[in-house]
Amino acid sequence: MASIGEFDFIDQFLKAQASLGQPFYRHPDALGIGDDCALIPALAEGEQFAVSTDMLVEGRHYYPDVDPKSLGHKVLAVNLSDLAAMGARPVAFTLAAALRSIDAPWLTAFLEGLLSLAREAQCPLVGGDTTGIPKGAPQVFSVTVMGAVPIGHALRRDGVQPGDDLWVSGSLGGPAYGLSGHMPIQKLSWPAPRVVLGQRLRGIAHAAIDISDGLQSELMHLLKSSSSLVSSHGKGLTALAADLQWEDIALAPELAQAVANGRLSLQDARVLAATGGDEYEILFSASIQQRSLIRDLSHQLGLALTRIGTVAPAKVSAVVWRDKAGQCIDPSLSARLSHGGFQHF
Ligand code: ADP
Ligand code: MG
Image (cartoon, rainbow, N blue to C red; front, side, top):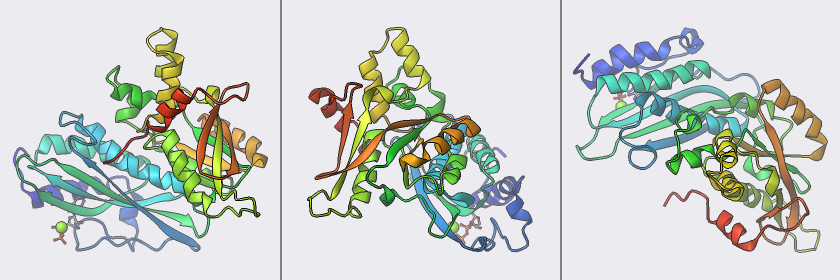
């Protein structure tokens, strides 16, 4: 398989590998790779589609010398994370690949990473497009994932209600620490999308978003999306502000260790955790009545779910961090936090 053409690659390789272990390919109404379109069997009664696309661009989202297996894993993982944040179950996905050449060993490893996550998530690769690009151009991988969610029960960004608690899954700051060159971080190369958590949060969470660009900036998105639905009751409070506990951010184990060893100040660790991207954890809001249910869910899933603050009506959307005594953290520190999110342009 040293030198193969695009069609051989699709026919002999992609098609055969994509169907392995996927019940989709045994469904009588399903059609996967090989025709002009894929055919997806009807969803269950009362379900609607949730669809999302994310791409990874060489030199922008990954380095050319990346482990291709982890890149394959990641391009699907980031898309599954969007389904998770919506409370949707994975159904199927397509892959668009812009390649400088058909490098068989590299693509084999890429597909190994991609398709083993696909099998684990029961989300089959059902089609896509493959194109050549000029020599010096960056390669691009784009996945479109389709999921299903009961109609009206998706976890949208605009559902936050005044008085809600804010929760976050997992622990934060590891990928940002890894990116700054300190150490290889498992989560950066092999993110684990919270697919089960997302579905279990339906009916519990009011709103959810995945933290791909950093907690602070994703929280602002959540607050701004939900603001238009807040009624002001004549007080001019038409926005939502979050009050967060600075000491309650769950630090990634690598960060906690770096702090313990004196390689990083606790302050810097918390800044990384509050602003660092590439987390793929779920930030969600829920009414305070749900606290014990959420703690039970955390135990059942063996996944930390940390309550980090609350939401209240406000004049403008804002994120306010407080210490245990209820004092706002230092203004210069808040300024660092509001400038920390990942900017795409
Ligand atoms: P078309 O001319 O209809 O675009 P292609 O020759 O591009 O067809 O693709 C042939 C088949 O292979 C289609 O079923 C398509 O979905 C699938 N395919 C092409 N590239 C990929 C890819 N990167 N991943 C998955 N399926 C692919
Ligand atoms: Mg095509």
